[in-house]
Image 1: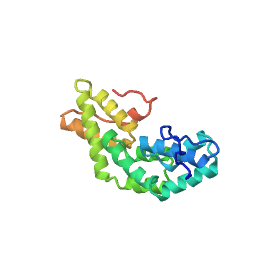
Image 2: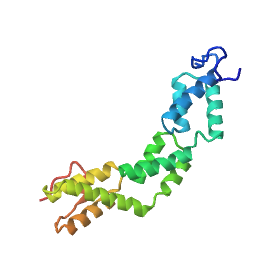
Image 3: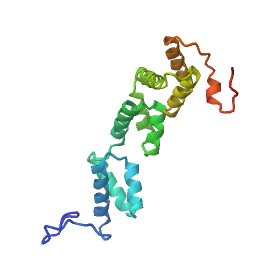
Image 4: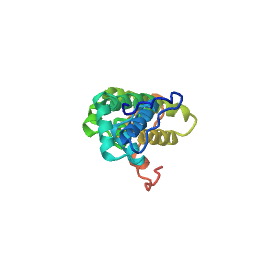
Length: 193
């Protein structure tokens, strides 16, 4: 019988790999996780460690999956950047941090985030500012600026870009606001009048 094949004589029962066949167990775990969604090699390796699959068996399965293209960290990183930037408006910095946490190699991260056009990143930040400012209409310009700056900071955009876009938006609305970025970035700063 081929490893991972259902034993003959029991067609209605699914094959359950046992502890005596750690590679089959590793394949089953990886396939189940990959069926749910894309995973990095590091995420799959961590799942196999949690399931107490021996390191040798895990490495054999992970290498085979990488060889046949079931695991491709570079493609995972590209898809992650494309998806998370467009759906959540995350900056390059935030995307890089998320990919590092998923175990993607530094060179794959750099390649993926470099594919994101800097002009697109600014356009996304501008769209986020416009949305936040529209949602806070009726509040004071100072409060609106704080809220928009906080949103962009949480998404990983640099303060200089955030305040430039906020200032541009407020000027387009005819609001005069002397933005002091330090007032918003330093929680101990005193409010200026």
